Figure: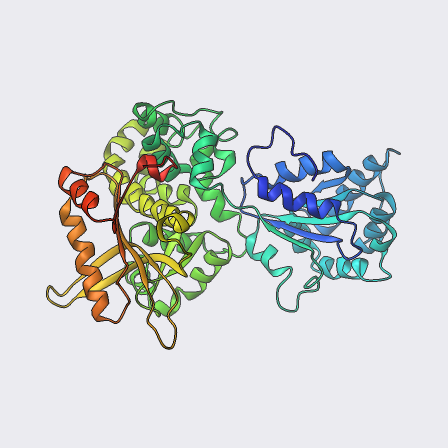
Length: 488
């Protein structure tokens, strides 16, 4: 494997995949596709790879076809060392010269969606170049197409797309997980700060340095001041980042509608009917925005653990949730430099409506990552769900449910039911809710014989709950140290 440069933090799996691709000697290994939302470090990784193995790196811009060809010719002439500029009338000529000039290493074309937008025929031209007898066969260089417009990049290899079946690598660079993000921000030992930071900036690497001047809170006590001087500060680049994330998606033509949909989800109206009701529109009118946001990886859709036809939507980028729940509501104050007043008015809502749900998501992620340790097997599904209680005519919301797949001759086994609380010390009343949900699900023919009841406590547990857990091995308590990898 190509040694990973010391300046590349984590990203070990991504680097291994890129190394295997770059080092492959198989004749069929000629094309790779790298995608991921902006600010995830794709360019950083691909620059490092190009430096390690040599080749050619070109970053496209939102140009016309003529401008794109001109800039490409300039970059390729510089790569050849001859100076001047190559003049191309079309991309056929440009690709011929590309593979004649770059004989080995990797060819990286970053922000490829810009080129494809100006020259829609370009994927077909690459297909022809990569096919047997094509110009790419004259060179041993491997091509990497990279982009941040997720819907465009996802379509490159889908359906009847010209490049379908030709890629040997399809790499999506995702945000760092919450454990890696804590190490990246230097707060892995201050778990409360780690959760609060992740609820604002998630695992996006660029938010650690470029967009906040490398400013990071050193303790939980400094978190509020950090929010005021960075995320809520109009003079710091991260201030408008959430708006840019939406504006950069090419398929989004009515930003106000999409912000309204995201605002509904951030407010807890996360079913299709709930979103439509919040917006005062028929549910048929929001199908397209939801599809576009999902294709753009800005939202995810999760099936209810106990209702096969019910789905909930979640915002994939924490900064967007923070913007919709905190910043958008106080925007006029923030633009006037009144960040402290805006934060004072929003802080309690942030803790309950942003951090609380985000903590639940971290608990679901922990459960997936720790499933072998917790259950001795891998669940088929880990999600949230609602259980209707006929006696009270209310629903019991289960924050974490882990289930196996059902089979024709046996019901699905319920591995665990969990409740997560961020700002409240958990007690027996929370355990009783889980017991009631388990009993109701047993009536619905779920196998609950070995079900664990898990309490995830951001603020800890009272003595009665600890005593109950000590007496029953099927009751599990997960506190912040264990959530962040410290054994109980």
